[in-house]
Image (cartoon, rainbow, N blue to C red):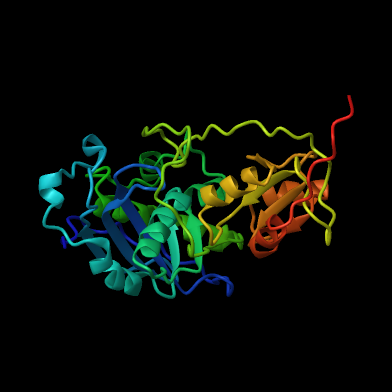
Length: 328
């Protein structure tokens, strides 16, 4: 464990009235990893606990032995020698869970940090006690901050927060905590609805690499995947209460209890077309959080696209109607 090498910026004065619907506490999280794929591991993690109005209550940091190649050492600086004596994830899972319990997980590109944590807990045959997350990128967009981009260093510069050790989990978490606080207060002043998303712990996952995916370290967290083209024409929209038909275009939004890539692979094996976005041609949207403020759910509502949850989709996958024969 490391001590916090910095001091927090002065706390802004809280708004005179505070939205009653806002969470009672936050866990600002940053993880460094061996890479971006489903089989990659966490090599360090940090948590800043904040109260309801963003004041720091505590902080925590640990190295994690990934039991494999540490990946992009040039990014996080953690070599095999440094990580050799570090605890493995199951050894820190309980303490980390205590830091996360009953709090909203806050992260910069929160889908990535949450995905890595969910997989590590699944490997440990347990689940992270996280029910909601908040992405500071999404919050910055909702606030309309005048940023040229949404990198953490850009957000830090906007609020005058000094970043001392980029890609060190503890310092990144500190910087994020100090930038989240004024953003939270701006949101409270205007009564903004926070862009909270539900977190679905993984109950089924796989470390196997996806077919056709190349290991790389791009700016976005999810590596691109080359999928075979769907051999069936799109038969149209799914009719609620009916069956899925081969060729239907299915899109996914939000967390799923089955690893997303496994779910997509099963849909493809059943003869469905997995779409990365929602359009007028989308047959059905699968989401466990239909009220979430995402572009896919918003488009589904505007297009009248049917929406079902993961459990219903898994049930429908068991009996997909074959595509009608092509008329020549």
